[in-house]
View 1 (tube, rainbow, N blue to C red):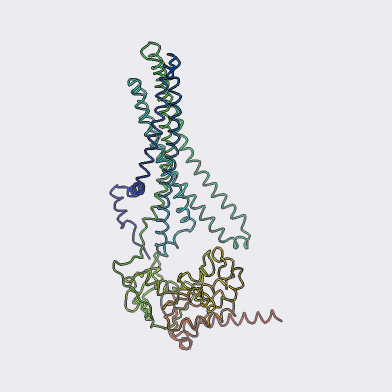
View 2 (cartoon, rainbow, N blue to C red; view 1 turned 90 degrees about the horizontal axis):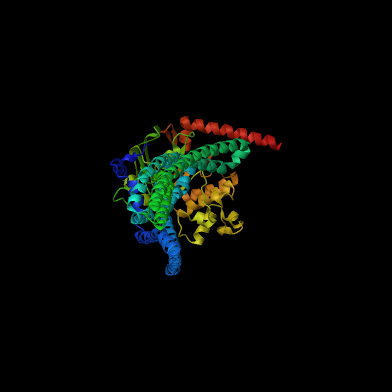
Length: 604
């Protein structure tokens, strides 16, 4: 199923007009903190003014104290220096605190918006993206942006103010010499721009390599049991070492790009200072200027070149942040093909009729379902069978709009589900899948996941109906026991029964069971099957089953092959037809017979 191209959204259109909406959006986030920014800028001005004042005082220190022996100035200037450095320290603190506050606040907003966007994207997005890469966008990439906002922008503003202040000092002291000293500055900005471009390009590669490394870690940690079972520890170590080696090479390329700018700046600065020593020294020797004026001018110039050099490093951080922002906004701007109409229909609770009208589903240039016509009556139990990859799960995934149909329509009580509120649609549906998804929370919270306001009594009743209460009571803290990541503290059968309890508690009128009993042993399966039979009464139910023996209660069985419904009817009717269903049944029957004979042989 092809999603709508990103180019259709308005943000992309603006970018095509050259307006850089991503950067404007970041600036809009900065402007939301105007009060703190104004206060931070005031602190920066204090720092810049104190730096300029330090250079300015060099002349009276030399001329008035050392040459003229002025005792009044000897008492006054040290007090002025103390005051200047006190203000400078306070300015640094205020600037650092306020700008870091702004930076952290912006990053919190970006991180929340990114996660909010990811959660709203359709199931197809998660199937096409690696979990570790998405995690890297939220953690690593956003942190790089934080460095740009809280460090680069702060430093650049402070250094710009300092440059203006010191420029005033050198022009005040000797405007002719100042003009010669500043000729080199435009040349000095060349490496800032040129090396900044390289840093941004290489930084994108570094962030992609880091995302790939995170994806690898997620896979190998999550699949550690398989790694150990197949003895592939050394193989995975070698793969990890290769990835870290690739990342190291990429990082070193970034280091080279960032480091080259500094020596260039040093050389250009040295040229300017050499000229000042020659020109200023000649004026002092000729008597047209004083030593105090010269040293005050020299101190200001030395201080002036320092923030100019810092701008190079800050520009590198800025370029890294912009590269990270591109990766973050690639997700934020992603267009979801599951959208809600302007005035959606609110579906009410109650028995529902589900209709598939000439439904075709295509994704990744592959047809998953073809011309499906199906009308499921309220309260009817429909079982879907067939070989793996036939389209059973794809069919039921259309009902809660995990995907949208390519052609045709899925309706509930005559309402096209694309015109219904997504929240009200999914409120009508409870799902138990073959993948037992539990969260790192308590047993009670997991059972009440679809109904968080459920009382303790109802949670326990659902657990008893799913035959989970007995093992829950044996847990260290009962219903308050944390389950660990993905419920890894429980067995497969226990996890499945909690998932069934979660569906029981939601008490939705439409029920989807996707291999819901696949992880249970024979005894547990029999007990849970009874609970499910009670749950399915009066509900429109879709059951995907691999074991045909578990669907004898179904009022209708659909045989799906190659994305088409090739047969439908009751168990006995389909066996009598001697078609696909009968073939599946015989295959399972012979396999079960063989397993029983093997078990008997083992017992003997």
